[in-house]
Each structure stands twice: as C-alpha cells, then as structure tokens.
Length: 64
Image (cartoon, rainbow, N blue to C red):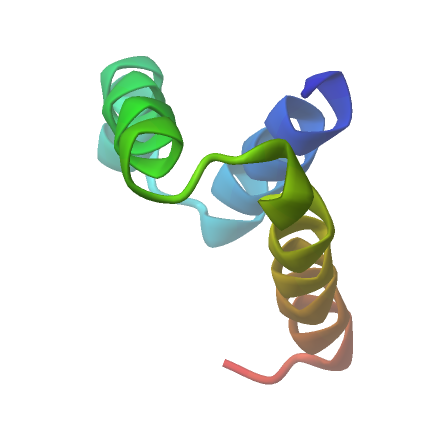
C-alpha cells in the first residue's frame, strides 16, 4: 500500500495539476473504499498490481 501511495503521488506530481493534488487524499480514500467493497479480495491483489504496472509503463512511454 505504501508503494501504491507513492506511485499515486508521483502521478499527481507529473500531471502538474495543483487542484487535483490538493484534493487527492479524499479521492484516494473513496477510491480505496470502493475497491475493497466491490472487488477487494486478497486474490484480486495481483490483478490490481498488474493494472497499476500497466499504467506506470504507459506513463513511462509517454502514452496518454
């Protein structure tokens, strides 16, 4: 979860959107709760990690 939070923070810094950064904490809590309520089973963690990895690779390539 610490790595996920750090990744989200880097995405916000890279987006250069101060308004979005100021409101990230509340949005992250809502998103995390939604994920745990709807699909947040331990067996789903690899799926979530792979999805985050795909986003990170796309960002690294400059693929919007």
